[in-house]
Length: 184
Image 1 (tube, helix red, strand yellow):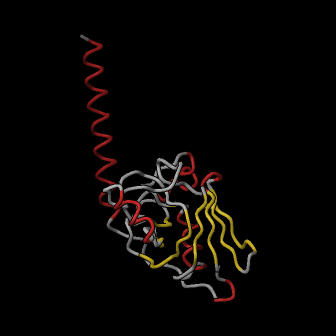
Image 2 (image 1 turned 30 degrees about the vertical axis):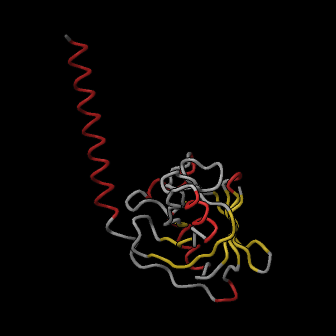
C-alpha cells in the first residue's frame, strides 16, 4: 500500500506542476515584449538574412559581409521544407521579412513571408493548408530566463528562435522588406 500511495502523490504533484507551468505560460503570453528597440541607422542594417537549418545558425549580412551570427532553434521537425500547417517544419527557400509584431506571444517577432505562391500551389495540389505565421522570434513570453538553454532542442512550430537579447538586436538591424534565405 505504501508504493501505491507514493505513486499517487508523485502523480498528483506532476499533474499540479504541469498545470502550474501551463497556467504561467498562458498568462505570460499576453504581456508582450514591452517597448521594442529603435531601428539601427540604415548604414548598419542588414540587407540579407541567411538561415542554415543544418547548422542551426542565422547570419545577418550587409553587402555580402556577415555583421552578426546567431545560433537558433527551429521547428520541432526540422528536416525538409514545410509542406503543410502543423508539420512543425521550418520552410526552405527565399522569402522576405514582411512585418513585425511587438505584441507577439513570443518575445518580439519578425514575420517571414511564407507561404509564397509556389508553397500555396504545392499545398493545394496535395489538398492541404500550407500553414503560415512563420517568424523569427525570441522566447515565449515569460520564459526568457531560459536564455541559450532553448538551443538544446528544436521546439518551435516552424519558426526560427533566438534569445530575447538577440531578438532585440535582430529587431533593430533587420528592416521590413529584408530578404531571407533559408537553406536546409
